[in-house]
Length: 249
Image (cartoon, rainbow, N blue to C red; front, side, top):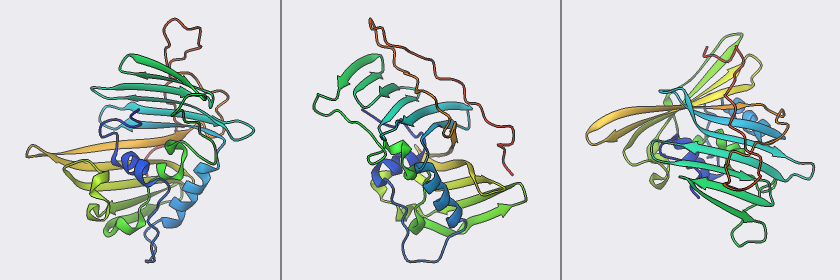
């Protein structure tokens, strides 16, 4: 199954291949490094959360990931991904997996070859620290900065794409920037990933924002897969709700 769709931002594609790699080579600290590393550590320590990847042009969530660990560390998750050409939904409770891909539904269980269960020890990629992208070796000094006031902080990393394996990013990528937004206490609010793509002689900018909400507040994971003819609870994904103070500085 495809875990990610279209451009839904470079970092998620890179994350899938690199996992928790942060490129922390022996070099001087880059702007805001300590806050980003702390945010990654805090994220993997959560018991539950919801992740939305929002297309900044449309304001729509193109990917939704909701997960929760049980008392022994087994993960239950739901994933929803949409693009102009694809629709993917998946629900996995560690014992059964329901997948809908472009209208085709499949059901597998833990007794079948190829079934994947996830846990704290083996997390689903979007529950790993790599969701908060940081490849230190590729961060350029030029164009990277920190801007802050008493209420919020913005960290911007301009990436040297020649220092990221070319097999990991979209063809035609000409520029990549990640902006991280923190509150006044250094807690990550969200991050925005901006890629510049050249295709057929024209250049376009694609911007996606990743929100991590409902932290340790997910009571149960909704099943986002409609299974025909089965008495399986199905829920529409709830709308993304953000606190009023989640704005740019």
